[in-house]
Length: 121
Length: 110
Image (cartoon, rainbow over all chains, first blue to last red; front, side, top):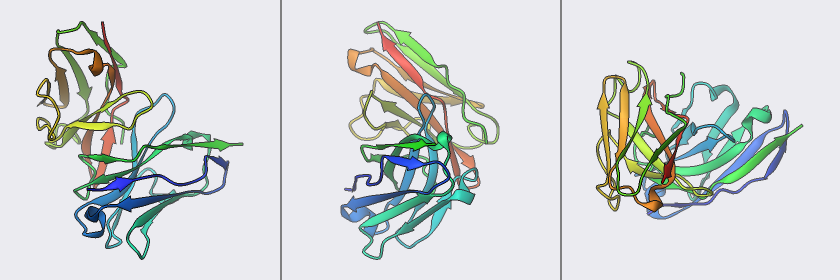
């Protein structure tokens, strides 16, 4: 089992960096069975995959966001983190920490509750 | 890569069936057997209900079924129930270690 809970600020200023921590409980991430990832949903829009990280440190990113995104695993492997630089109002969204069993998140079966992040000017 | 195209809304009466489409291109839906569907109720996180075009995770009722033809995938909900009223999202492998989503379809049960 894998449980996720997003942790981070609700408000970020434009041009600054957004950071989220995704604490993970359960053996699936530590064992390498699951990847951790972040998916977002801007208001009035569809879902968007941002990036994924494996406990080994391997990462995959959405090509359209790659230049601004970094994901990494904590040494304890009980958390993974996500940072996005130079945010703008278009980055306002609900951000979900998620888990998926394959390198590409073609089937995301584990979802955190989500956290709303608002980018203010 | 462009998002997949879904109708913004769909509706059906209790007990009836409704089908939601998800249109992509030959570079995503048309090239991979990796289409998923998610159900999202207001204020909740999405829930995986279909993966690999036709497969259902454990616990998902068999009223939900998926299909694909060419560049278009579809989700059919049979025997509509009140709790099926939700937003439905499709996704597909988009090539180059990428996954893309549709804009979501709000299903209303009449």
